[in-house]
Length: 215
Ligand SMILES: Cc1ncc(COP(=O)(O)OP(=O)(O)O)c(N)n1
Ligand SMILES: Cc1nc(C(=O)O)sc1CCOP(=O)(O)O
Ligand SMILES: [Mg+2]
Image (tube, rainbow, N blue to C red; front, side):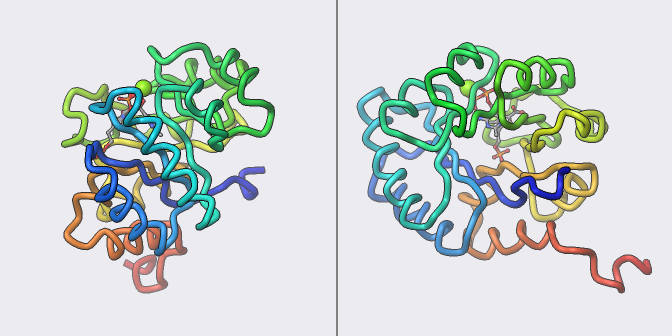
């Protein structure tokens, strides 16, 4: 069943008030290829967020990459984005599903709770996110999740996203534990070479080489 789920890198934008610079940074990553992009900007006012979201949506459409809007399903609906991501303080999943329609990507933050993921899926979430699995410089206060939550959520029938402090070095651990998508901010956008970092995350989804499995 999980064979048909989307897999790969789910890049999330860093807070950047300079729209031209943000678009350059994202373009470099989209050129290599990511599975999904999330627009997240915790520092922008409503006007800047809508402007940046609209620019990113047209860039993502050009690259064939779905754009998911963090926090604000109304903004996602207004601009025709591909979906929204909601945490525990970001509104009602069922209301968002109703507004966005049956085909929208609708993610729910589930932290370390399979029960929360079960409820979110029943309310209309199309995928569920767990984390933080490792210390995150972006969100130092994030709640901690254990690897076992990914396996425990396998039966929900929706893709499982892992987030929080994910680096190319720990990425395979999460994929092996059941993550379908790896959601990453700093590991991509703060990397000295973001394009090279994208390749490194993509490698975590490839089968292990025979020399690695023999070890
Ligand atoms: C893919 C993904 N997973 C989790 C989050 C975190 O959502 P939330 O808890 O609402 O925190 P903020 O991102 O809004 O600070 C996410 N954005 N994306
Ligand atoms: C936005 C966010 N949510 C988290 C959660 O655990 O729900 S961790 C996190 C930060 C992710 O950024 P980085 O890849 O730089 O660690
Ligand atoms: Mg949120």
